[in-house]
Length: 200
Ligand SMILES: Nc1nc2c(ncn2[C@@H]2O[C@H](COP(=O)(O)OP(=O)(O)O)[C@@H](O)[C@H]2O)c(=O)[nH]1
Ligand SMILES: [Mg+2]
Image (tube, rainbow, N blue to C red; front, side, top):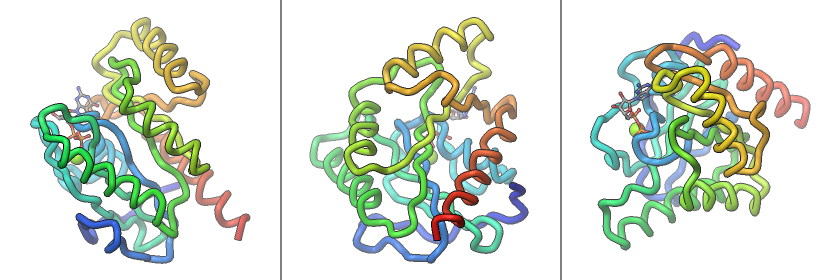
């Protein structure tokens, strides 16, 4: 697919207030600092659409981005697993993420972003278990591929695939910095949109 237009629409801090645009949504999930905002900016080809930060743990909101005048939405979920927050705050984030995943009427797929240098930890596995439990389809996307050599990437992909219980071939490898992997992501998005059209 082609992305001709993208704009921020709304941020919500409470899942009871999630909007219903009546168009398919792809949620972007992953640890704090994994590169979610950079990924969105890269894919929509707009430098400053989603706020990026070198300081982890800043996004505590669900942010909606409209693509192609309402053809679909990217939903940037708050990053999980940030160590330096207290338990009450962690619980609030969990409720917001799970509240969105359980209640969004338009969610078609969750893009689960994984830093290519990190093996999945308990937080990642908890998200995957949750997606399996509620039968929410997902796509694993490795970020920051520019940080590793080709050989290191191949090894890391095996570890990530094994840790999450998916095939290495199912993982889309990207780098927002080196600008690689966009075509594969767009092809996946097109496939997802086609599939939800034929279901209707
Ligand atoms: N080398 C490299 N750095 C990246 C890439 N994507 C994001 N980053 C950096 O990782 C940090 C966190 O990025 P951000 O998009 O804000 O992550 P988020 O917290 O998941 O939204 C920032 O310092 C980015 O510049 C990438 O593909 N390659
Ligand atoms: Mg972010």
